[in-house]
Length: 266
Ligand SMILES: C[S@@+](CC[C@H](N)C(=O)[O-])C[C@H]1O[C@@H](n2cnc3c(N)ncnc32)[C@H](O)[C@@H]1O
Figure 1: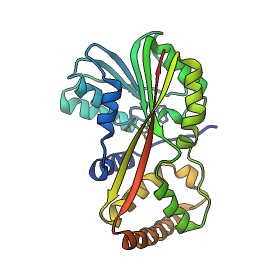
Figure 2: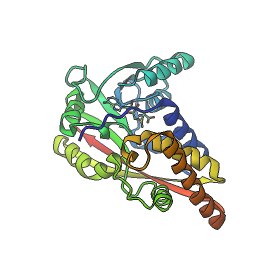
Figure 3: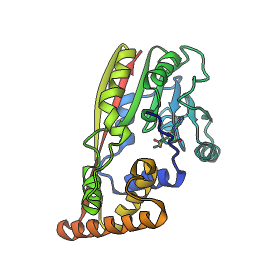
């Protein structure tokens, strides 16, 4: 399955901001407790985007780890580099296409991570093979992504608004199956961890912001539901009507993000 997936940077930053404002649990705390990155480690963050995870490791290790962030979006890399300058960090942000050979020698890194990114790889065996190759023996791979029970309420509202069948999302539909199995076949030890975050929206508007930033992300998958700007706005209108009815009925809108973290050891 080939998915040409480009994240518009404002949508990614909008979703990160909404998670921070309305979430009940903090994914950064979960990630840090799970990975316990340390000074002196060599870390590669694949599909780093604007560098969220790379900066998390930078802070956790107090700048004492050698961190490389790789992404194929020059726009997001520019954002990451600007923040690097702003906070005086020394993270190496560079171009990396995870569908191509990684530009690093065998056995280079102690930790290779990928948050909500690498599961879009065209050939999982190839991409995770590259991650395995660049890790040192005993090095760890951490991949996070949505589990199938993720964002149920979001899909139910869209279903009610459109009466349409919701297309399977490549992240959640592949995460526990193909992705876990591919990693498990390459690595010596593989575990699945789970993180739940209830996003409670105190009004309809920020939920609609989230819907827009999400429909854009997977717009190629949603294309059966809208064609062009007018149909897109009409769809948003219908979703707003359903969300408003739910909000009036329940007094709030609660969406639960269910994230899986695959942690594997070479
Ligand atoms: C949802 S974002 C996650 C970004 C970041 N890891 C975070 O947690 O904020 C997905 C990222 O995957 C990147 N991406 C998608 N396909 C890619 C590819 N073939 N090679 C490298 N990066 C890719 C996108 O540019 C985007 O930055």
